[in-house]
Image (cartoon, rainbow, N blue to C red; front, side):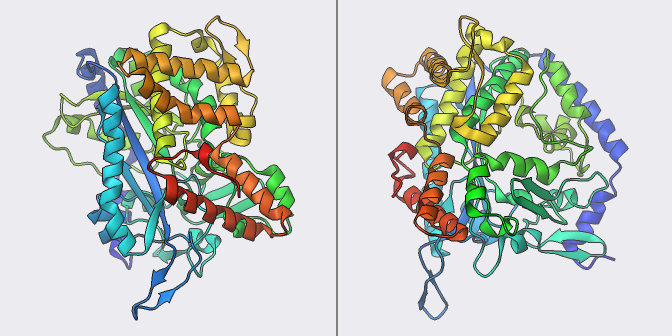
Length: 517
């Protein structure tokens, strides 16, 4: 018999019938198809939104109960008190150190994007005082590297208790779904597998290493979703190559005996991608993967419904429109693709079909993050409306671009099809087309030229200088190693420098303004 209330709730979930759950998912899928045919999921124009994940670290110092200032290593991971998380209006994510916000969808126009920025700034401003009162700061990043004080990363990620046969992660949020995923008969990876890093866990806690930004684009017409999606898949590699931000793991996770220079030489720029894949995938079930394409919106709905169910979570139907397909939405929660279609809306008036773009890690500054949101939405709008020839780029090539970007970032060899239908691997030509498409798409939505330049400039500067967050970190670690630091010192010093620069520049700066000293 389970000893904890959480364990009892997990057991209840694990007893839900997979067959009955799947039958209701398929019924819900038919509801969505019907509503798509009725035009319920159409919008008068494209809308944008953003999910933004952070993790918490120590601030420069902490104060103990006697009022004495106790210096701790800056940047160490911090668990966020649940009361504080609720008070600041953020949502819990997988780890106790995580916090997530979601912006209100806004039209893709001048005022809509301004509203996205203003909402993020407002939410962060409201969170500042209670977060600082706990001597913490929220960090926007791709992968944390300094574990909590007094713990190793390996301990933090693998610490768990056995509750009558159920493995419960000590440092995981009290979400039944997260804990159930590590105890279901449908297996998950529960491991890390990257160059010179290997870790086995009893839960899916290794996934909590990573954080992301996830732009959403609501398409004007649900029937046009396959076309928009086809372009989004082809944007995945080039945008990931500019956004990579996770070249290093916490130092204690590296295999014993591996030289620091070997870790540096073999580092992938976007380890976050493989963390998510190996934490949740097995050899037999690959839930996290580059997305399949579809020819019709009905096929997209069927793909989600037919996906392997990890945990058939309980669902309560209410009176709202979205409750008519609540089982389908629950199933979609574990439909993990790097780009995925979404069908949602609590009411008929808010019903929407959208694309969730998941390859991007958290970014050094808000301006960098908004640049990705606007370039993605603007390029998507123009590529679709112009029926750009890149839609004919082979799916396999788009997939190869994505994983090349994961490994090598902006140094990856990418393949693109130009507006003239010519294949090119010239990096400058690829990004000139991508930025030109974004500019045209944003201008078509009424954005002034000056505002368009402001949004595109952070990414254009990355191409011009061949700089990404991952390359900045990689060079910083290389510099510290050449100065005589060991690998742990080099990674910790780099992480602290990243956090300090972010604290100074997050609201108004951009990555390419950062120095390497």
